[in-house]
Image 1 (cartoon, rainbow, N blue to C red):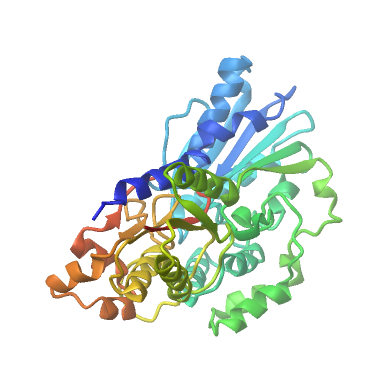
Image 2 (cartoon, helix red, strand yellow):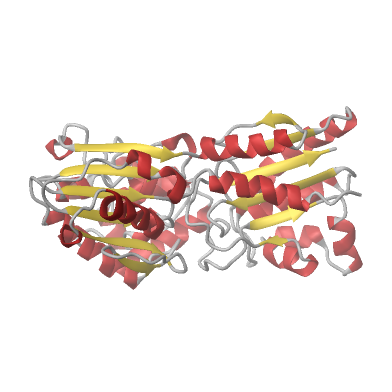
Length: 426
């Protein structure tokens, strides 16, 4: 039996490299301003993006370092050295006090921007959690509590962000409003299905078409019971997000510099180079992780029965409705459900991973990116007395894969273009 783990890891590495800030950012950077360059960054790639921007302006264009200022708010464990832009590490996916304080200073910097300044906004996955500025009337603790409830509910990321945008003083176009005297250029690494700019970091610099009523509908759909202050805030017209006709967008533009589709294309190229035919399921898959795994298992088993050598590749962001008390994000849950559905079929191996290096809703950056399975996954588990189905029922895929040594550890990748799933069929 050929060990396909090295190839699976190489395919993942190719996808991540295609979206790294050091590779993708510089060609999109705007001309230096006459005034100050105010760099405001958020997300898992925030510090890396800020550092790449500094090298471009300071080293290539010899921009005056005294006129380059800013704050990059990134996830704990994602700091890189910078010269002018301050880096603050903050909580993800649940915001913390460091993020709240950094966001308040970010807003003050934005409000200080003048006509000849350039506000350079660098966005990447995780920005919605890193930038936390609750609207008047709700507390930071209430916002944290609601975030945890949303993450456990099985709500899609776009639904979570609809709620976030209507409870924030920075999301839903409000950063553009704070910066309205200056030119605002936002460069974004997309981590959301279908690359909706208003959902990336909850759209701090773009108009928002969703409404307070939409946010309330999400709360009702998932039977959440938020605090009274949250319910009141979601009925207050003052908390409506910024709409397309708002004059604050007159000097604002956003450009996508990397998308999940770009990473998927790099993964496909790597698998094709290794001699596999490709079944491309797209970069925007959504759904419950274990249900998607069952569908993908059927495709893999069909290809195996037809003796096809194929790579089944997909991106997107799956969800997990948490019913147990275990650990493990949607990629680990998908991998475990896939192993069960394949039931030890020979000639099939698979990887499922979050391209940021930490699976799904993990609150610890050093947690695994996902997991790898093959035809021996279930037999090795059985030899250790492990009941794979019980682990899945308890949403405890992380413990399962830790026991058999198949957790996938990458560490922080400093980017985020959603999840990658690769099934190799011999």
